[in-house]
Image 1 (cartoon, rainbow, N blue to C red):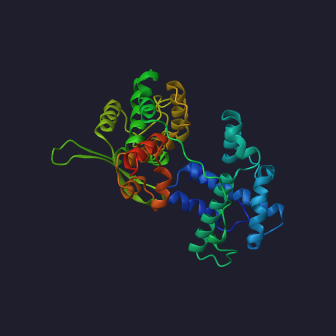
Image 2: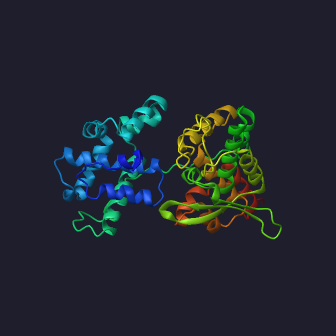
Image 3: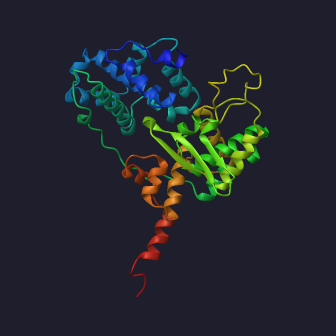
Length: 359
């Protein structure tokens, strides 16, 4: 059992909690996502302890108090006191974020939670209750769907202009002096924008998942993805993406199975080939760095490339159902959150399609 799996084994008043975490692992959730579930549910556990309640006491009134507890900001202190152990990766991550990401990212660990953060924790509880229900747990305190999320103010997501996203994708060519880092990072950004895949899906890709054929009768440029909940799908990449992916793959001289591998400390040859894999944090930090270097004002992340992929496909006439399939969404309603028009597109559509444009 590796250190990650060991960190999921913890004593708690919540039944089958460790089993739930391992079910997430088996369903191909990323380590970061599993850690987030772990943190959110242990905060619930600390709330129950503070209120001298058992899991069986979890009713609608208790959920209402739990929402107030999260908004009060006192949850963190109780959580830290309950789970203050030197090998706790959640607290280590919280401390790291507090030191390196500034007050905006650290707020979820240090103060009152906003509506979206509260809803994330409630959604974690829903998922946990569904797991118990599917596991035929006998003493369910309440149904998963009885937990109502708090009302949030809907914010229209911002997507960088196509020209800015192109500058971001091409940034490694300018700002990375190490050829292998340049080739790898350019391939990463091309693949994210060309396919619309999630960053966790990209990080988990292996070389064998890339399907490329130069046969004239079999034009194949696609990626096999095992997504959330072990849902399988293919996504497709452009000839441009294929060019930069092949450049990176031809430059590699190693036997590591992962598609994207780190190079810092790797060339000493000391790492286990089966765990060598680039991290989500590295990719996100590089995108943030490139964004500043090329002067993009709109907040931009790996998810922004996924969002931009859907937005610009829609603006060019792609069928929403096809975009849904490419993104790996179960619901078209989820896809609709990604597929939105910017102000310029809305103005152009109004001028083009409104029936009464002139006297």
